[in-house]
Length: 279
Image (tube, rainbow, N blue to C red; front, side, top):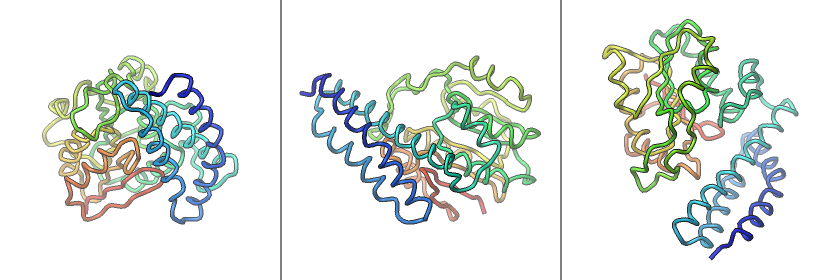
């Protein structure tokens, strides 16, 4: 049985390592070699804590602790990339990153920007599933201010887990619709769809097509449903950016892609993204 005192000690102990480990992981990613150390570090924490915690209550504490550690690693790597000027910089990504209204890393923001630039002029609307505080939605809206952007979210946090690979508890990442609308009040091209996906797609015209969709759903079934909805509706050369693909805390995302299958053009991107392109 793990006491609160031991939980607190473990959190401080791991947090002390986060900076050098993040630095090592980031340097490996910059030079393009295999980022195994970062992956193994995340897996090692999960393995070590998983063998210590046994009850359901302690499992929830385990996931919360692991998520905080991984977020600390990611934030440290982002800070290094910005301060050192490593990689590509982008003025709009800088704005979103500094506002800190997204869990998306700086490198992932750059990837979204690159994909959006490739879809300009293709026709079709834009979409995001999993809006949270509206950070990446603002990036998309700023990039394509004249294109309709559909935002799908419960705006009340995650629903109940529906699959054995789902790890995020009910109500987590809850941000109300009014708060997001206030943050994005400068944009007239946004349409909000509140509720459970894919039921909320009934509000969209049946003939609607998309040039780009950013999916950040984390759970298995909603990711599978999103692929089933968006991929057939992509215009030629349209793109889906899937967040948290291969991430240790969201195994259901990758499994949904494997089970759905049938993507002739797709590639993994740093940090944890999968880019899918419609031929």
